[in-house]
Image 1 (cartoon, one colour):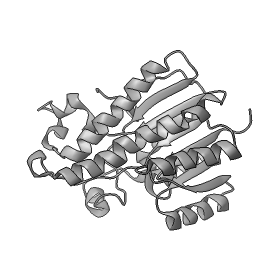
Image 2: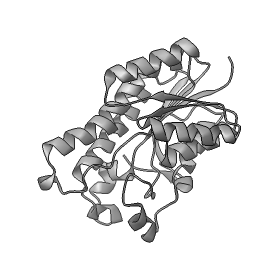
Image 3: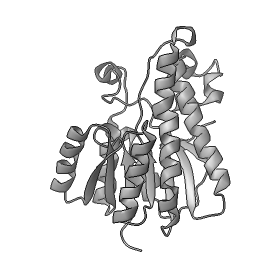
Length: 245
């Protein structure tokens, strides 16, 4: 089969774009699934200026029909993909459980959980057509039930209900599909970027509190996407090693 084809949602900026640049420079064909097509067009210009082979498609992960159309378009043009990186996500309200509205909770889950699940289900046929397939779900240590309940861990003080719940649910996408496809040539893994300064949150405040740069936050995802050994399956890791579920 030909070139490694990688689909990255939300890659029009931030860690997604950093990941697209790194993987593209390594020779992969990059397909950006962008919510904001204006930013997506700018990202494509940056990638092409670097000599990266890249395409842009509209991708609203909260719109199942759009996700279906996206997958169909890629199938018709390329016939397969090797890597799906579910990077698109929103921070949601950083409010306590009692102060989180149903509207905000549903909106966060729609993007971070249901959107990621839709991408996996709709792109699975294309992954099956490839020599090998990888799904990398960008989640968070704030979605770790173990760390959330550990009073000795610094994360214990964070109780952002909507975001943490959505990332815990996304982690189960990894667990569930990893079990279903265990022993096949398709793997599923979760990656925690750590506290990273991006445009999705208060970037300046995060930078002042020692947050990672997007380049640092994307490092583990890039490493996993470039790993020629596709045996790692059903894991939750960051650049320093495994994270408890």
